[in-house]
Amino acid sequence: MDSVSPWLAQEPRLRWLGIVTVSLLLTVTMRKADTLAFWQDFLSHFVVTALYWQGNVAIFIFLRRRLPGYKLTVRRVVLHVLLGSGFVMVATLFNAWLEVRFEEPGAAFMPTYWGNLRFSLLTTLLITNVYESVYFFQEWRNYFMRAAALERENAISRLEALKQQVDPHFLFNSLNTMAALIGENEPAQEFLGALANVYRYILLSKKSTTVSLSEEMTFVEAYVYLNAIRFGKKIQVLKEIDPAALQLRVPPVAVQMLIENAIKHNAINSRFPLRIMIRATEQALSVTNTMHQKTVLEKSTRQGLQNIVSRFQLLTDRPVLIDNRGSEFEVVLPLLTHPE
Image 1 (cartoon, rainbow, N blue to C red):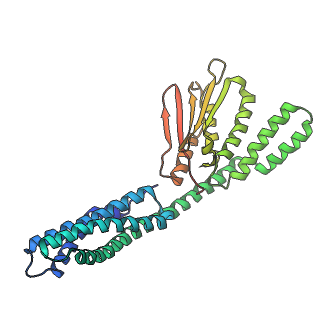
Image 2: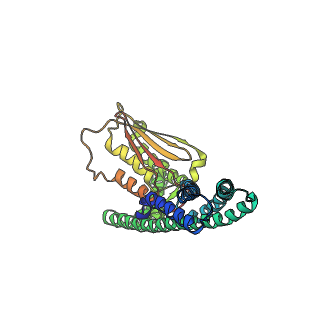
């Protein structure tokens, strides 16, 4: 979720207004009677001011894209100061050459350079401070707005779960009791064990914003096992998971909801088996399923997929991609690098 503040929206216009204003001030305050004509002096200051300002804005935009958000402010500011200082040292060579060549012919180059460098570095620090301060407070505000929105979303989800479900603690304890009563029936024990794992995961993760992909896939395996008992070979789930992706994060039950969505909306029989492929790299996870839609669809609020999209919008600027190719349906989820 990325919003643009009114200040940043007007920044290009304000930037050029600032360049013209600073150039005029420098021309008036630093003008010498025996130098260039006023318009020539102004043009010289305008070129130099624009060079410094545009260069620092380019550095700011580059670092904002590479190190976005308010949590990376310290690293971004340090790099901005270092890169900005290096840029200024080079740009001041050009500034000093202009001054020695046109404004003060015969003046010593190095004293002129060092004098200009001190002023230019102070100006760069001022520009950096203005841009980073505005960006920091914008991102700080957006972060807490996202956190508040996500908390509201989680609260609504928990409320709906309470409305629609029996107490999961009661169900989990009942499953353990049933397992003890079944005794030596191994298939039934395995089925109940998988069902208990599903409920255990729901209990432990329902208050979490994100979980590791490793945890989510363990839950998915239990969920797939339960459906394999129901459908047999008519449902096939394949996985290609990069081990490096297992430590990345997703909202809890996001992957399971995609599999549930495929089961709910497709005919599953010997003629049309449901094939699901789960792939994960260090950037994203995709769930692709074959499509043979049911003639009569189950009753559904059709909110599952939209719920996933909404949750990711609160966690990252990277979109959830949905591709209906007719014979296949694919959803690509961005993987998150750290808990939010």
